[in-house]
Length: 308
Image 1 (cartoon, rainbow, N blue to C red):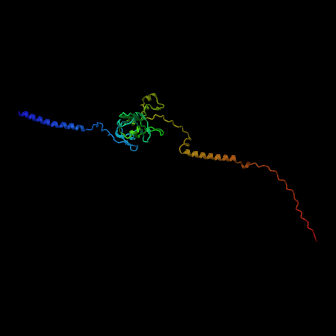
Image 2: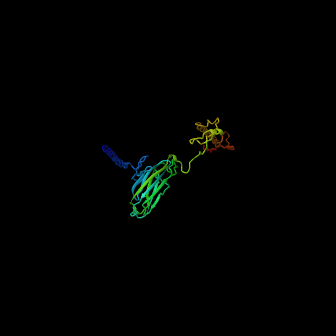
Image 3: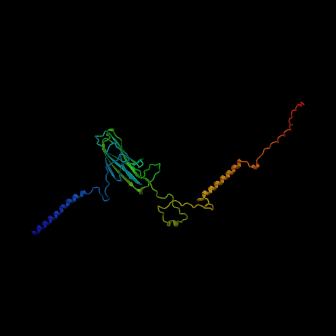
């Protein structure tokens, strides 16, 4: 009997140790964050928005923004984009109550680059009209692939900061200022390794490697050149002569200077010869001899009367 009571006491003590541990474990399980994962924590959801390019709220790739807004305002967000990426902006607008609205609303999402140039969308409904009975409106815009460089005259998207502008383009005047909620999500695909233009890539070199004089057997034994090899043909060597060094390098300037001086001197002599007659061969015209001057008699003195 004593053994039975001892066994019952030990079972009760063991049960008492197990019962408190179970509630504590169940209470601790909800404390873990639901968004935590093996790869890391999720990016926080932002609750701010800008009203101009200068006050735009910055979003990272894969980050969301939930903002209560006033219908009719211009809303701005900014996000970075790198070479080879293709960003996509998704917007969901929770419209005001249908009882408070007086007609349909048209919303528009636009993307601008760092130079405030409006970029075109390649996919997604950029504009949307919600009837008075609708509760939500979804918009999206997929940007072209970010390029590493572009011509000055083109409007290709370049790496840098891009801006999202959400606005209402057509809305009844009495609906301005109604409270709404906007959800924005920025997603990107691709990267620096995917910087080729969409639609194709260069599989073979434009100019194959040239191996002059190589035999077929040697060519077969030679391994194929790598992708980093130079595919342009080697330039042919220039033919040299005994006077090649005289008209190359720094000597070229002196030769042209001397040749120019000689040509200028010859041009001056030739011009003087054509415009001036030589002195030794100057022609003198023949003039007749002057007529002799006739002899003139001396003047006759008047005779004086002799009064004596």
